[in-house]
Image (cartoon, rainbow, N blue to C red; front, side, top):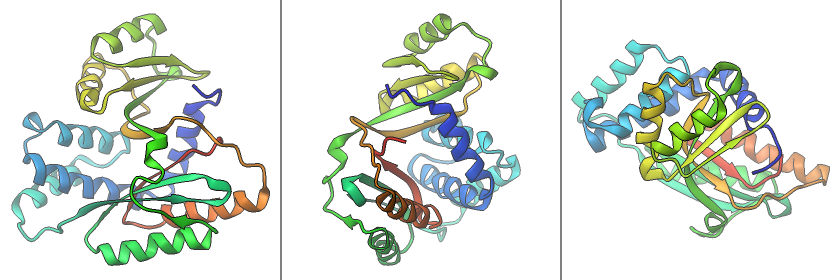
Length: 242
């Protein structure tokens, strides 16, 4: 585990996201469409949809907006058909970058992602060129401030529910799961009233790379900002040591 406060990073992300609620709601709206089309509109029979709804509520998306999105995806055969496309490449100083997108126009998205890499002095590579440096995992972050349960009890609850790993950071707990077990673990914690600051399938770097060159950092940040501002981009993962 890195010595950094994951929760501080999560909060920082959330603050940036709060300024861009439209972007977050767009991301979640597309995930609702995909989840409904893959598993149907009934959350009780669709664990992916349950996960997306939990994420929507954590980001303060109104219930009627969630329900409207589900109904639209279920009832409208002409609803946008989004395609999942993942791009991989390198930023300055060899920083590995993975970009997950949901798009209804892959030519537009490919051009935008390529432009973001180029403007930050990076380059897109072939599929698989950096993803081998990451592990796909379910990750649940629990704020110590909002959770009254003792660490040992919380750890046992998470492990009993099927988690792979549990760690304690300065201001949060981190629960790691296999992607296939993520929904079951998240729901088990939810049923016990455990407040989750973040819960998602993510890509965790096997090793982190530190960059000290200011120009390289500035260029990398330019790429990340351009990607973050793009509505087709769902998630961006890097192995940068923050």
